[in-house]
Amino acid sequence: MYVSQLQAKRGPAFARMLKDELEHNKKRVLITHYSDPLKQICRNWFGWDGRMDAEGRSFLQYIGTNIVCARQPDFWVDYTLGLLSMMGDEWDYVIIPDFAATPTNWTWSGTGSAPATYGLNRQTGAA
Image (cartoon, rainbow, N blue to C red; front, side):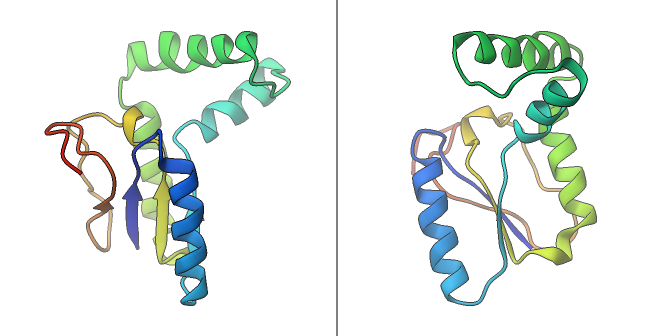
């Protein structure tokens, strides 16, 4: 399994394009986001209605950053990569268009191939 992170501003559109191309070549592809488990928790535990208006974004920020990341800064990345490491045989490629949300010290510790990272390199600014 290859894990690809994409620059957040261009991530969603490029992720869909990349997924379409890979699936055309008979590859199994998952697009996921570090915020997906946060949104699920907010829906199930706190009754969040899923609206991404100013109030909804503020609520997600409060739970995801002010509470969780204040205690465990890399929690959402670790959580996502932990699940992927257990399910690595399900996809050939996993695309995460949340590169800007990723810690600068991100490294792959799962099984299989090291991740390929597309888009902006946070430390150098190079493509």
